[in-house]
Every structure is written in structure tokens, then in C-alpha cells.
Length: 279
Image (cartoon, rainbow, N blue to C red; front, side, top):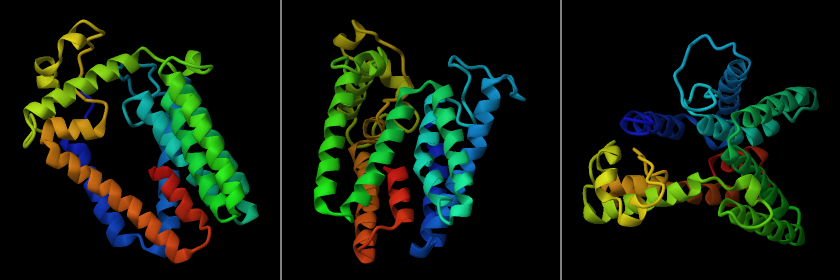
């Protein structure tokens, strides 16, 4: 129901997970990057068509209509941000292909802009920062730690802005931040009341009113069918065990990156780009 983030979405992601495990080898990360860039390029071009009124479908949407193939400008902006580093990296070498790299990067940046989604900008900057940090690690520890401190301080300023504090508050704060907090509390309450099996897959919208507290009822009290936090969503609808399984998958992905990076023991632009996109 609602955002379509339930069974069908995760069944599709499981297919991608298994296919990647079977067919993507250590030396074949460029294949993964290539199709990530191509798929994001296609859906981003479609977003730009929507921006200029050239959509072949008449979608009904409560947003600005720039939804690509993902149904929501936040999702589309985030997907473009996720593919930005891979797009810049994949075609950068040899030099004769750099025009492609810059072209894809330009398309993705324009997509993030027209989506008008703050999280698109944040995701893009975070991804670029992670890539540069990995690069700096192999260029000398002083450079790495200097960049790490800079990224950390910038992250604190951005976080403060999202919480309506500091110099970036006017740009990053949205009233939805408060409603997200209410949704998280509701999901936490639902998980605590149903710790083993949750309320059932795709069912948070059916139970969110039941488990919201008095503070939420007196606040924005926006109706929601999603916790807007994957860990809490899984805990609320599938119990804490499902949330732990999801956490284990993330831990395994992080462990795999560390293991591959140690095996290579040098800067690998494809591996760093995949990791930046994933993170």
C-alpha cells in the first residue's frame, strides 16, 4: 500500500542482491557501475522530460511531478545522487571518454536540482565526500585526517540546519522533520507492542493511528503508511528480528568493502565508487 515499499520492492531487491552475488566478480565492478549509470541516466532524462511537460503519461501526484520512474521526487533525486560519483568515475578514463563522464554528471546534477529535494543534495555531497576520503587515505594520513575533520564539521553544520539551527537552517530545515520524529516514535511504539512478529508486512498504515502517542496526536499528526526509517519500519512490521536481519545485511556489505579494500591495498576507483553509491 501507499509508497509501494513493501513486499514487491524487497522481493525485487533480493533478486538484485542474488544476481550481484552470482555474476559480479571482484574484477567486474565496472559492470555494476555501468548499469547503475545507464539506468540512472534513463530515468533522469525521463525526469527532465516531465519538467518540460513532455511526459507521455498523465500521472496523478501530490508532488511537483518530477518523479522519473520512481514515483516520488525524493526517490528520483536520491537515485541521481547515488549514481553521480559512478557516472563521473566510470567514463573518466581513458581521456577520450571524459566528455561522456561530464555529460552524465551534468544530467544527474540537473535532475537533482529540478527534483527540488534537499536529500538529493545531501546524498550527493555525502557520496562525493566518502569517495574523496577513500582517495585521501592512500595519499597520506595528514591529507586524510584534514579532510575527515572538514567533512565531520560540515556534517555537523548540515545536521544542525536540518534541525532548524545554525547558518543552513533556512535551506535545510523542513516542517517534515518534526513529522518524521512523530512517525519514528509511532513505529517504535508499534515495535515494542509487537516485538516478535510486528504488525505484519505492509501494514504500518493500518496501525499507525493505533500506536501514536498523545504528543504526536497534539503535533503535526500527519497520517503515514511508512515509518520513514528502514530499521523502525522493519521492526514495526516484522519485529525486531527482521530489523536485526536488515542490520546484518548492512554490516555484511560494510565488511565486504573493508575486506576487498585490504586485499587490493591501494586506491581502486571502481570499488570506491560502488561503496560511495551504496553508502
